[in-house]
Length: 314
Length: 288
Image (cartoon, rainbow over all chains, first blue to last red; front, side, top):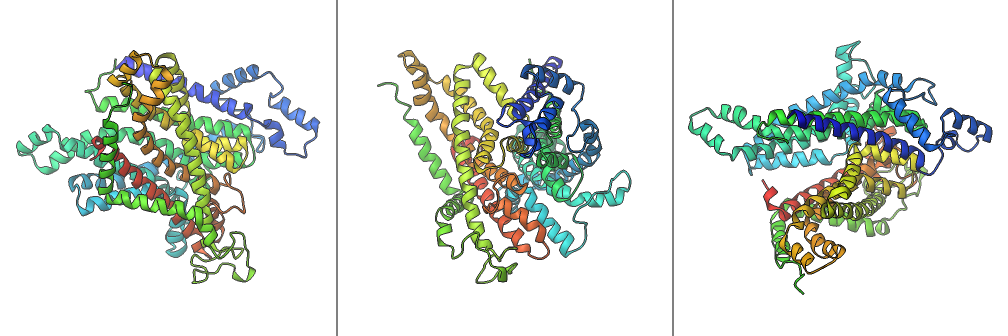
């Protein structure tokens, strides 16, 4: 197993390296000189040349690539062109917004996904099962930005229960900070919850058909013990995989959600970078999110092995 | 001669079709998808208004008989714009997924059929694309390529290639070992012929299922990009773009935010249940 984990770790490092390479080449090889794009049309050739030198764009491509790899390894992402600040410190300021949002969204999603998932497996092919399945499909189909708008319409504008946006740090004022994260995390977690419900249902169905469940029942164990201790624990194995894969969707979603609810997180930093053509910021944010995603996938794989000792990797 | 595909392939398709018809929800999804495609094709010709016809007197009219979905900040008819939006979504979805299906399947077929180094190189490339959340990669493409409808289509196509490549590869790995493939090879059929004539037709059903689910994703990604201001540009009425504009007038004209969003959700929902039904029909083993 250690060998397998080492192998997965190496593979992840390789993927991250390739991602860094891909980001570099997408930003440089595609038509349009970043310096020209950043300065728009009214730039004089002199300012263009200065910026090109500043960004190192006058160097041969292999030198630029090598410099980029070294810099990225040392977490040196350069300076934002618009904000004139170190990109790394900009990102570090934004993470305390995005990480609580993502964690809250995952927690909310898990809590609302598991009971209906288990219930629909136990009441398979009944009306409630169909209703839950339809609900899950609905959750998968509603775009997060539309759900956000609907939530703001209902809970902020009509019922006036929750603020429509704005940010208060949960580290400064936990109550208010949490209150402001409720709508964004529900909007962000909805499709996550829907995917999870479907996985819990099919995982439970798979397990409930197994012999050891019959054995557990015939031993006279209560239904509660059979369902939660015997069935649910084993049904979680495929669920964990989906949770890991869905983290990517969640991280991508923060871009949209932070924009709508005006939260100053990593996603909104990225989106502002995109609109202002602040290439160093865009490069760094995309890279960091891809790295977080790869780490999540790696952790998922390792957790999977611990949960399922029957699997032997060579 | 003896290199005909096995006769069971057609029987399998017939079984799949029967199973599909029995699934009411999937049939409903199919019907909705067909209606939306029809609406995208002929709808704009039937609407009494132009999508960019402004009317200062009718700004922010609530839904009425004249304007069943109300009007926007320029007095443009929302129903007409939603109908045009269907055309954009369907167009972007179908073209981008056709590209992804073709390139992805080809890569997967080659990867699975030849194995070895080619397989390694292609699959590592696929891993790299998969290391980005889809919306993020599309965003990265849009910012470097610039915002245009063609670029939206390419961005979505690239994002969806890995899905098709993986599905095609795993089917190919199984099909490669089948007797009819071995037989074709034994009588000296060239690799290209074996791949196109024997492997591809048998690998197709799961790819089609993937296609319908990918269409849902493509429509969501296009709407997201347009919502963020990186997809279709005004005055072209795409659903995402309309929702973006509606955000400024939520209290005044909530209908502007409700109808385009409902159109996206309905389309994606229909594609999802349709695709799910297709999967059950094509691969009964996956059905629970």
